[in-house]
Length: 289
Ligand SMILES: O=P(O)(O)O[C@H]1O[C@H](CO)[C@@H](O)[C@H]1O
Ligand SMILES: O=c1cc[nH]c(=O)[nH]1
Image (cartoon, helix red, strand yellow):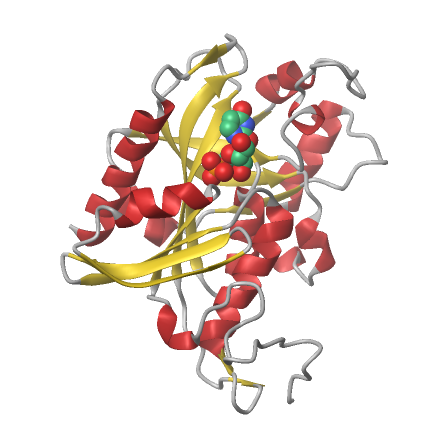
């Protein structure tokens, strides 16, 4: 099937619509960060940088570290952006932009999110590094795809029951990390966790500044959920989308979280930049040796 110009949208220079990238611009190892300024923080550790491109919040640097080619790209905030980034990264490696046809042989990318997050258990100190084993998506993105085969419906059902989840909100879904890629990134510095991906930072994460929240004790409800010996550990805004779309498209993904806030104790990191940089260093050492 040939993909029409309304579906596979290319810029005049042949690059993909939002990311502004050509197929040769990206490496097999992709680091995603939310904050566009974090792209340069990651690439400052590269030995050489061969490419810097950007459009909107999607900034990309590709380079070499210890002989390994890496791409770091910013996604901005939220799984609506993840839908764009994951689909366009996949198009770059699995669709021929000349013929507008999907390649017969598919390529698999390794995708590592390095992001910030808020813990909901009091015993997780700020500045902890946490890898998401399971993501509970409250954002609804995955339901727009034929995706039941990558979801963990029993865990989602238990979560809905435990929280008394309102039918007016998107149905929660659960997706797991890629355990092979996880082994590469793990060390005794990294805590494993269950991450809730929210569709906002304030109300959707139970934060109350001036507006009341629908339902009560959101954080306490998340904190008391137990499934298969696991507890929910943290909240952020991209992981479920990254895990779900990666699995659907045949890529491997792991989400690494630097815990900056603790919602149970009310603390916030005193050195957020230093802590995030330490997680970046850890990930690069694990990926590039
Ligand atoms: O630090 P990043 O990677 O942006 O990640 C977290 O921080 C943002 C909210 O402040 C959300 O994107 C959340 O997922
Ligand atoms: O509490 C937090 C901290 C960082 N990012 C989030 O999404 N939530």
